[in-house]
Image (cartoon, rainbow, N blue to C red; front, side, top):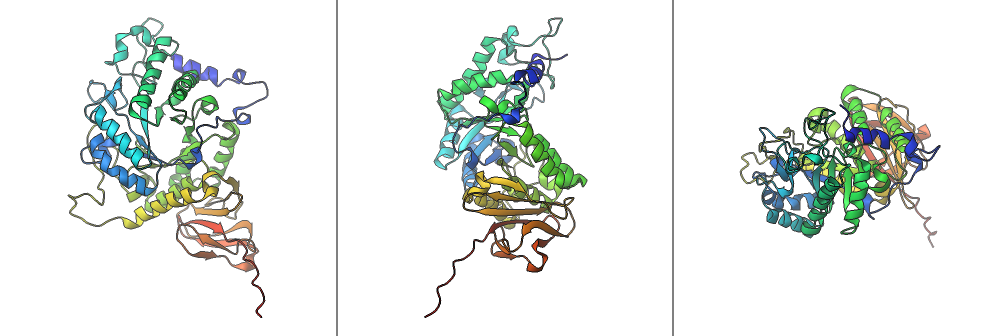
Amino acid sequence: MRTLAVLLFALLLSPSCLPQGLSFGSLPARSEPAGMNRVTIYEIWLNAFSKEGTLKGAIPGLKHVAELGASVVYLGPIAKRSQTPHASPYNIADYNTVDPQYGTESDLREFVLQGHRLGLKVMLDLVYYHTAPDGVMMQHPEWLVHTNDNQIARGFWPQPLPQFSNAQVREYLINSMVRWVRDFGVDGFRCDVGGGVPVAFWEEARKALDKVNRDVILLSESDRPDDQLHAFDISYNFQGFLTLRSVIRDGAPAIDIRKQWEADRKEYPEGARLLRFDDNHDWRRAVIEFGDHAAYAAATLNFTLDGIPFLYNGQEIGDCTPTHWLSSAPIDWPHREDRNDRKVPEETLARFKRLFAIRNEHEALRSGRLTWINNTEPDKVVSYLRSSDSEQILVAINLSNRKTHVTIDLPVMEYSSVEDLLAGGKKHFPLYSGRVSMDLSAYEVLVGSQIPLAPLAPPAR
């Protein structure tokens, strides 16, 4: 059975909802809050982030996140979950209560406070597409979607669905969002299955949140184009991730990444921000899916494209432990006191710190224009420029497992050398080719800032 949410979703995406002749790509995305281009997001999964698996246990690790260079911490669901057997953290019974497994309200306030002291914003995970079969909302049957024979309906995941046409439902859920912001200082929400909830609800929620804090960040776990017209600030880029995976894992041509980017530009509102990720709690770890070197190449792509870079806890040290949804499986952090093996993945950690650093330091990477540049190996290499008024940065990434000689369609006399922002030093290109050319090892990356012309030295006297 089609649920109300799915019906509304289809309706809202229909061409009749737009002025004749327009697409979402011809409309502007919402511009607030300011400074969104500086956002980099780090996901904490409490069962993994610390030995304790709790909010209190995670607080000492916030310093690590800040030192890494992230600006936003996103917490997996902490609301009280269902008591049904094997219920996941996304099976929420009470939207206004911290699950005792993770701690108390005081622990959450302390977590947010310590994050703010370190310059980090804190986002919570909201699960509004469905609710728990033993949850608070079940006390109000009229709050739930029903089948044609008046039975409580199940959604894509077999859980009850909130009835968003009911004003009491909207008020209950929006009041919960406002409470977390007003009473706990939370800075935003990652909205699980955001596209399964009518966009009109999120727009109503945005208006209520703006009255409390206009800088609240809303991230939609959806690639619904109209989410960013009036409600959301960021959307998941699922097609971008799937395309990247098909290139690295399955051998699809690298130029597919450019084609998907160009398709996104046409589909989403102008100025829309897409989340660039290659690892999170829903997918296999990047280092397992791609391998060490390819995973770093994927991360470099996501940090140098436009959009919002995202890192999953442990990714910065090459952690390969699968996400455990119900039990504790702590990451083997280098600083853990109980480690017998004192080897530290310093090189991997340093490389990821550098990715955050160049993103934070260079306006061209944060908010500059992106221009795709043709190259002679489109099946293997992506190449593009990120440009601001004062800087041009060349990015070339070999997404294949073979050493490749590539020529990029840029005049070599203007790019005879670049400052290598990741490895340090200068990268020189041979002048005889007329175009920028280089050898790239398997999964090798180059992020190079164009070196401006030096002034002529005055003649010696």
